Image 1 (spheres, helix red, strand yellow):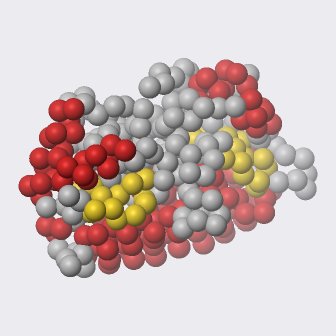
Image 2 (cartoon, one colour):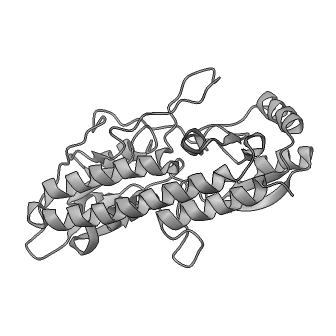
Length: 298
């Protein structure tokens, strides 16, 4: 298991970007920490921003190993976006290697943090984007940061953000309508690791997982045994793998409980363009559709 690298004094939870303006007529070069965030930045930035994601599609943002090319991207960025809440544990090491002295935009500022109930040591869940209202907050923070970095195109950023928020509100309502069709006692889902706490809080679904908030943590034998016992008592019949995590542990739990595979969820990484989750809205619809199919009485 790779040691967590803390972000030491680089940014805290800063909202103000440290960006240098792109040459006139050229788009801002934005760097985002991972694909879900990169997509939202692109939605707001439109043609005035080119976006690079450090973590690639299907990549795990917890266990990401930055490369020399990532350091180069960071050095050349006009503006850098991170989610925050402890997700990008590798960023301090990358910033040091790149000689990066800037202040990333922390897009999760203003989001009500979720801490898993019953946890022995309280730990903030970093997977804020799995609740659509949180991504509306992201969108507004990204809009403001881009306006500060490129005031000339401020009106375009405002219009793009407003259009995207309209789509996000429709998505949020669609998810709520779908979940409402499922009896409350069947709203339970088994996944690989605890990445859906915000989804559960927003939409009234209980998630169970053998692994904790980070894929860098290891579940103890006792934790796995307790989860198996809980699943047997609650009657979960379907389990989900995640596109960016090792499936072996959840498969072990499924084998012990008789749960069958329900497909692949995209918890913290988009798919490649040809996959089922090439953007954030498609990802949320894909995940919700699979969960609904598993939870619906047969």
